[in-house]
Length: 68
Length: 553
Image 1 (cartoon, rainbow over the protein chains, first blue to last red):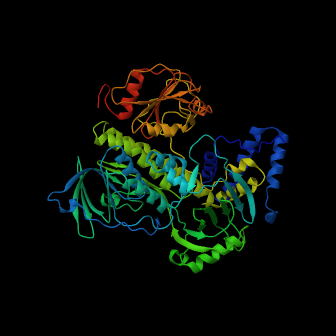
Image 2 (cartoon, rainbow over the protein chains, first blue to last red):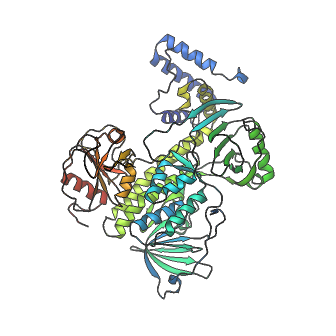
Image 3 (cartoon, chains in turn yellow, brown):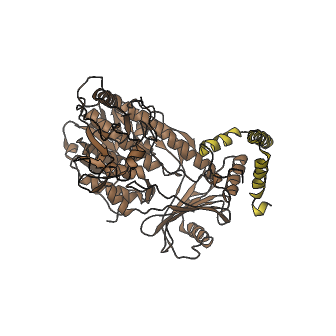
């Protein structure tokens, strides 16, 4: 497992607040687009394909049973 | 003593028969946790205090129940910490649930080497009762129940007060007034001042429930549970087999209706049925419906009037930052007001109270607002991220650091305080100027165990110089005497030396031989040096007293 899933954020609460703030007052379609741009930016920063695939699997596996 | 039912009788005071209004150096308004703490602190420093309360009872209901480590350390300094800890209960394990599943369980595993726990749960009326008993042992406190402040005329060097009693009004003159009269502060209103910020359109039901269970004291937090869909629920424990349950109700709930036992009991039954507790019998002790706002006054000092606690600032309940930050206000104000009243510190000390505690209030408001926004997402995308965090938290530890059901009150570091002296040398660790002194186990020269903060308390009300041995003696300070606490890395360093038995003082303060910390009367670090000199300590002391260089008080 190369994907880091242990705590790694410098300042988790600061990050979360900034993330929610970035979406402030955006309509749903623009929020989706922002999230898409954000994922692409972070993916490029990570670079390694095997790590990105692990992240995609983990995100897909995180779905709740009742929404699967 | 049943602190919930005790009544403190109104008593007539000689001031009510005075031909001209009596003058008192300090009048504290409001005998809640903040006003009582401040009055005790001032009295211990030799300042006579009149403490006014408009009622004759302690807190109605358990209200603030979570008292954090820093508050307990302050209560230690005020002479009643041990009784609080003996009465309170603690927990360190918790569970977080999302919908019908447990997301994760946690154990706070408190860091070793501190005398006091991370927090205790204790009913506010018990805390107030223990503070009242401590205050009663101090002759310098004149506590007047059923003496209600109804008028104030501020002036440059005093404030004239009008006080209403069951036997009619009387007048007093106060050198300084401390407004500790709560979130609906009458003093704030009388002075035409406001507390401004963000009001949350939400309501919460608190139910105190008594049940005999052998369940460990755990904190359970539910996001969107099946028994209370779309809202949050919190369960945690108080002394005497009482459990606090907080149900989020939403803004549209009718507060009068929701306070009725016939509405509350089914909610509690549904919770228990959905938990491991099943159909355990319970009785309802107390219930209340509340709303909250995150707000503060623009300035905590208005001439001779100083605002503290909920009168000055309000937070959401998540993180227990209300009463705890209020007691820290009192801790910050007590020594400064005493030095100013006694002519030993500069008036700017009171400005520094306001500046330091306004910044602390901002920090508490920020933390409690973040918790509130996580618990109650304010937009659709915010809810999407909140739910994503909870979904990932089942599997991945990183996501648990983002789950925010309250960040427990920790003391503010007073960065940028005008009373602090910036580091001129390199230090590791978190005890920069402005931080609260960290505790550590020590051993006295006679072999008896003790604690670093306990030793600071025993050095009296003033400043302390913590010095790492071996170190030369410095010439005594001029502006004010400073006591020393000399820490040694070895057991046999001599009389009046304290052995750092587990090496924790050395690690937490990054001590090297000769390192010295100047610690304020409220136990915040105000300066530190690798190679201290008498001149450096003197300059830092004068700065911390807000007096001109070379002045002697």
